[in-house]
Amino acid sequence: MEPSRHDTCVIGAGPAGLAAARALAERNLPYTHLERYTRSGGIWDIDNPGSPMYESAHFISSRTLSGFGGFPMPDHFADYPPHRQVLSYLRSFADTYELTDRIGFDVEVDAVEKNADGTWTVTRTDGPASVHGQVVVCTGSQWHPNVPELPGQFSGEVRHTVRYRDAEELRGKRVLVVGAGNSGCDIACDAARTAAYAVISMRRGYWFIPKHLFGRPVDTVSDGGPHLPMWLAQRVFGALLRIINGDPTRLGLPKPDHRLFETHPVVNSMLIHHLQHGDITARPGIARTEGKTVYFTDGTTDDFDLVLLATGYRHQVPVAQKYFGDEQHPDLYLSSFSRKHEGLFGIGFVETNSGAYRLFDSQAQMIAGYIHDAQQRLPNAERFARMIRADRPDLSGGLRFVDSPRHAGYVDGETFRKYLGKVAGEMGWRTEGRPPRGAVSSLCGGEGMSRSDLTDKTDGHRGPVEEV
Image 1 (tube, helix red, strand yellow):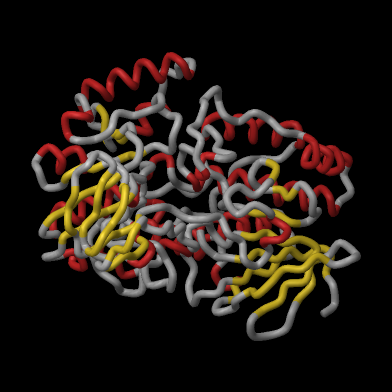
Image 2 (tube, helix red, strand yellow):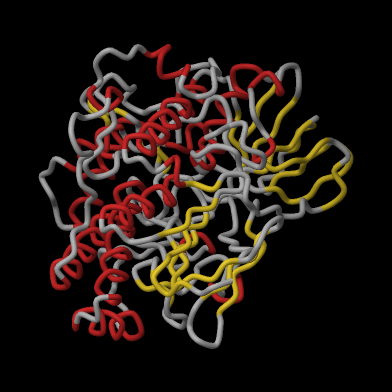
């Protein structure tokens, strides 16, 4: 185990890990890339054991605003790409930047340990341990389900949505979906179409944002301006949603107990549609259960065969939990740099209201820039090291996020991107990866590749064209 102070170990080959690998490769920094599964793509590969992916999953940010810097999603993708298109995009990204052949597949990491000399030992389940100067943990935040106990004794089937795959599982059953995040709403809509009876339970009211506004993906409308002060944007867009969706209580939904943008956005056009057509019923929180009967807090009751818990995930980092600390919100500077342990980084643990890949790209570029300049002993690296320890910027964008575990450490996407850009500019680092050398790949160019060709790139699987 000869230590390599210059080598960086990247753990995980999902979107965050691929962004990290490109950023390191662009600077000719040596790195070792490990992935426990046999292919890249992370959660977006529905066949990856433990993936939370389901057949009706689509991106909730549009293709226009979802690609990595220098490698946009192609124009012939759906406005909100389905999971199979996203997987095709990720694997094309890895191939185009020549990252795939550098990944050690089928290699599971057991633990990351800090050494006395400041290096890091990475222990594998099978195979030799290795020593590295830095470690970038990109193991993802949606592998460890949050599974609350149902009050009482429910005798039907209960499972977390991490084990849900297809609407056919619901056919002929009386189904209760607990939770109204984006996955919960997607799966509730599946139940509305196929279950014998469908109910969605939510403890608080939410603002439901349609996926399209004025015929365009809603995030492109807000991104294109005009850019209003947050207090005014809340009033203007809140009033617009009230006009579009009407009074939510008329459909049995609880009234939101917070202003617009103060929770993670629920971007869904179909739940309101199914509620309006009686395909699904909205209920408040669960008071207790007995047998197959669920008693809700408003005094109503219903019988169910299956309860699906769409109750989110914990940000566990099993390979290095003792260094990352709190599993819900690791204390990382800019959601990437360990404040206490030099040489330890993480990508993919940020909770925000914008598309993830652009943020992953910016975080990866800053990590690689810092590693490069620290190895070159440039003065800005020491200045940035001091910022890692002491700088605690307000990245809320003036929003008062609701008091819930998910929103601990939550950041406003636009505010976060601006601050990343400001800091990177001061350090002389870029926040976007470069376009591929030579001709743009056929996937990015959007020519000469049909939708079936894209599906073929994902191990020959064919299925409905849909996202998250």
